[in-house]
Length: 611
Image (cartoon, rainbow, N blue to C red):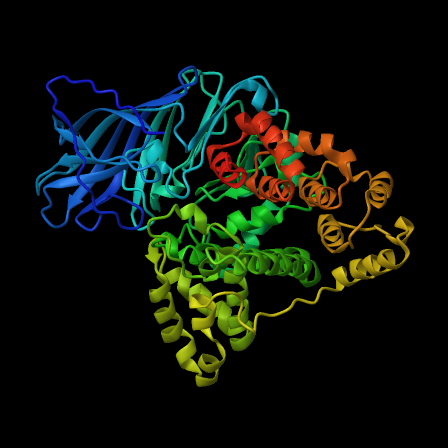
């Protein structure tokens, strides 16, 4: 929706222009001319109006003597601007549905501070305003942000691209019965005034700007770890994350000191569209990982790993996204292996290898998606959210594993430690990474360089021939059960004693085509439709749709109304729309559920459903 700008004029000139502004790395910001080093926010949180209002003060350095600074903004009213404390004119450029509009403010070579007074709209895409009924405890409203990839511009006027890093501070005013948190040093309890002060002294990119406000409590978990959650979730969450301190300690033992002080997790309400978001100091996490058996904590390991890959060394452009996620999934695997052992980690890796193959197979038959199976993407003129697929995550991970397999773990670990250390708080492009890899690792052994076909992995479509197949002792047991069931069609042939979430997922993904009655027999024996594990429910409901087991439709509707995580929504809706009747059901469920979904998930599903 094109925003409507409210203009307050008080000795201030406002203009609108339609000239085409330069876009680089999905930002209008002229960051090669003007550098932002620090942002100071002073914001009021208004739940009634669903708005943040106040000021953003940007410390700048005019590197080239530019005559203007250009900022990104979207879905907000710009109410005034100052340059070094003096009122300034500003111009708003042509609006784009993905990028928003450029905010242009004249400056001089000597300009040091830009102040923007603004107010966000209720439909700012980064911000989700939840009513009490949409939270776990159903007593107080809740606000959370999701800035990645280019949504920070919907709640802060800034240069919104990963190439730009800055420190920040903030004063946030909230209702005094709620607690405010950010991706910075955080309070652990409410104060009477409802005014909270934050500082992030390490430079971060805009997509790691984060805010949350709600009725939450804190529980310490160790030396520098803890969890925030609604009162009704705090004990469950603390129990689930019992191993979090050992994860931090294991990560540091692998790849060097943790640079961010504390590592805490905030368990959000169900509408959060992702598994987790690696906001520095405070990971945002979906409540769907609170499974009651600690079986889904690999997500915490993933977000923790981002404290090195992504937060410490950041992809410079969204075309280089795999440098964030590929390294992070690889690092996650190593953390899980260190804590839970090789066999358990390889079971998780084997499952991911299967998911990657399905993604590749699906994308390779679609001419429009086929180029997106490359690690290095071309997202120019597109929403960078298009690059958030298994390719960046899993193809990236298996590329890094292929290097480890060639050079050996000892050499590979030494390289990664050096990579993180020498590039801390910097950005990295694919091209510079290749140069760094060759100079610091591959040039040490000509045989290594010959065996590591990085061009095929990075610039080639699909999977190279040397992408390894993973053998898992644990999953071989499940394969035997699948074989027995396929022959006998007797549910008694499936012995699930000792199954974790991941055994169940492998089972469900490998069962043969079944009749509705056979599905009913499975459901009767294992109670799958009424289970409480979201990962298992997601795969089970896909199987139900595929095999025409309509008895589970009510439970599936309830599930799709109670979770907002895109990982679960997308595959189930995709299965539903494969048939005419299924698509009708999908649209009906979506219309009922969409008010509880985040804008990111709504856009994905509307595109899929064609509505």
